[in-house]
Length: 297
Image (cartoon, rainbow, N blue to C red):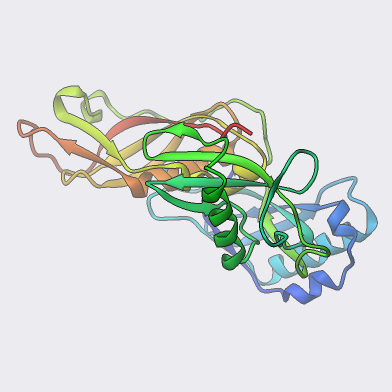
């Protein structure tokens, strides 16, 4: 069975960024989308540009595909529970200028300026804009604090706000980025797999789940796309409480959100066994839900 692997593993390949930049600024207006096929060993077996892509972006997509087929390798993390039977990864080539805030930094009303997401986790501020320089992010955070942290929403130690900043004339340098795409946005998915045996399932008497997942772990492409949703995954725990395996169970919004939820939860979730819990070999399983909520604008 071929599945959507976007957001699950790491696709590596070799192509100079300058080669994509040279293909023209048409990418700013029309991103190119490609679908990469991989076999169970992670070898790339094909790459296709999406139908209907205009000529210049399609040329960039073809150049990327050629490099991926020639040099690409997809690595699946060792915690991915089912043996990989091959699948596809979506990639988007986008272009633009890095956002540089006008100094002093000021927040503006829609539609002026650049929309950014400011996150505050345990009192520390960051800006969820991957192509903004660190000094510019710090300036936005300083202005945010000075303005009284407007529109901050959330609960507990994690909060977020969506604001617009005025940009300096010309903004930053022109650049091209290859991002993971989302193939099935706004689609509810139930993943087909054999559930564990009843004796392998952890219950309330065995202990409880503990997790350190926060807003800083929000899947990057979902945050850019204003995508939220509810996901359930099946985590496998050893007797020490460490999560050793994960596979998606269901998602209200795309395979990407489910795959990245596994990547987040397996590293930040453990099972605290009760003192009376018996010893065992291998893994025991627990279905764990997570809800991703976009901060209010």
